[in-house]
Image 1: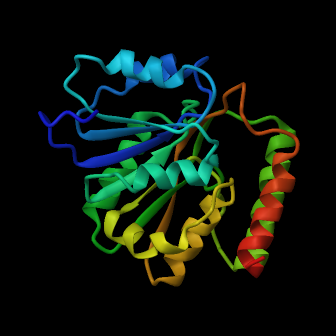
Image 2 (image 1 turned 45 degrees about the horizontal axis):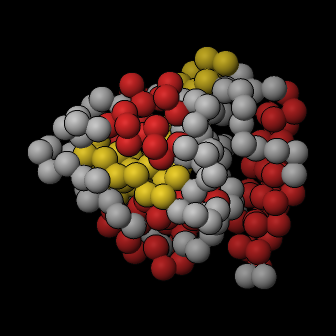
Length: 235
């Protein structure tokens, strides 16, 4: 469903895999008509029904894409990006770790600087603002993953996995054919492909809050590592 009453400036993709338990807390924040909201629901609960019920009758530009099969983080974001309608696109996680206000600042910075093609939010640079930190185990996992990406892909960024990234639609369209990636390694591939295509990716600190009930499990690091190996060595 898309309302044509408003003309949004930015397209925001929100992967929503089995988010029925917490999506209702996020939806009231999504009241800024500068955005086109694109939800991607590929789980087994009633997340899509909750989303559609919330937006019913409101003059918002909203799409809720539903899939019967699991698409993964990367597959979900790609499905959303492929139906965007604005010159600036991006994504956030549905867990409210990054607020709409924060992602809007990234979009505004991207729009205002023609020399930047993409901006990624970071929890590990000096101007970041960590409201609630992750458990120590998650932080160790995150830092080890970052070291691995630096070694394998020669990326200089401090935080490739933060769920807040924006780019120009033009930049995304130029790399979209090489973005077949369904897992959590999507973020790395996204940045790597942009760099290899000659685009300027800028990393900025953001306000970020750790949330409970994450879909990241103990086996996720192994899946992410395997995803990186497949990406690097084309396995």
